[in-house]
Image 1 (cartoon, each protein chain N blue to C red):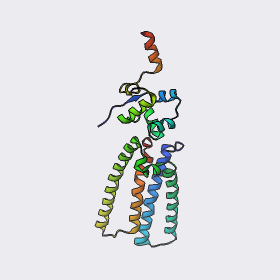
Image 2 (tube, rainbow over the protein chains, first blue to last red):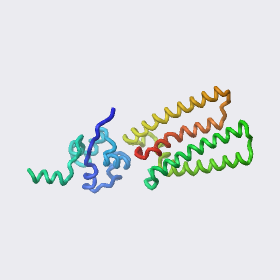
Image 3 (cartoon, rainbow over the protein chains, first blue to last red):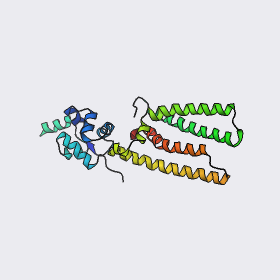
Image 4 (spheres, each protein chain N blue to C red):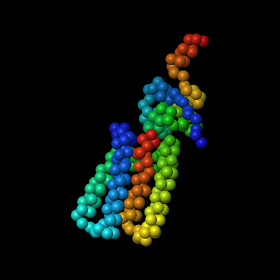
Length: 83
Length: 140
């Protein structure tokens, strides 16, 4: 079965927290190459891994992952201005 | 994976390693069955062995493919397990068909299996998963 593409904000959140890929990898218990694959959205994590990633950033799973493309920061700011 | 090496370079080394291994086997078989051992055959064996060792070091060891394919399952994370499982599945299918085909040919030709062929197949069984990993850069 071909799974759907899962979009995420891992790249932005990791940079915001100031973690290197290696540091994030150690926190979530994967090898650092896997963080790269997750950030490039080339690998869909398991539910367990998705929860671990969300916990590291102190967010809920749906704030980090989505089945729809994630809006960029400028899109979010523009939407906020319009409302 | 070694990011300094391009995908084409890695594939070239993988091809070179596998072809030189096949060539080594052929030279051994020809020498053993008909031509006998002479300077030409010894030179061919030495040349192929050098090509094999060099391409193995570059395409498998330096690229990290060999280490990945021989990593303990406890050290793999969930993505690597998915990759490993997919690779092993393909490698198992290819190797099984190849060994059965070799056995069929040897039976039809009424040849005897020799130690060099068996040793080459054992080496090939170890090389195959690493070859697939090195071939498909996106996997590791």
